[in-house]
Image (cartoon, rainbow, N blue to C red):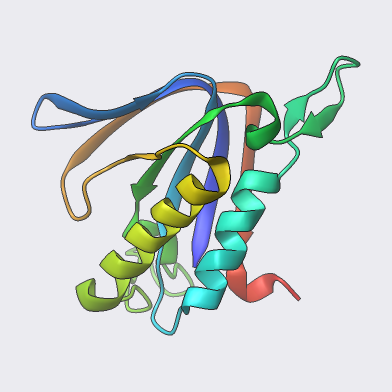
Length: 150
């Protein structure tokens, strides 16, 4: 699995003109699920998401997590994170997990982040044409690939 974590002042996702999820201060997380991804990788990424110290403390040092600040999380599925751009100019999504694997892992990731935070996670709609808006705070953007954790 690959995730892109963005520290935000606010974020929202809209489908068909209807806002289906939004946050105030916290994280917008784009979630890409690849073939072969496991529940163990999902749990590792969820724990990393909640514990990543990218919010400033009283001394202006990035030393606090989204959990520490009582922040919110919006998680949006994004299969394009699995793109391979090695050959040519048209990205290949051959590594993207199929619907039967990707949906349960994305939903489990959202549920696990919510469990660890003690509050629900705002979500996009898997497979939908979504419009995502955010105010990236910093900007701070972190990319994490579960296959590169060792």
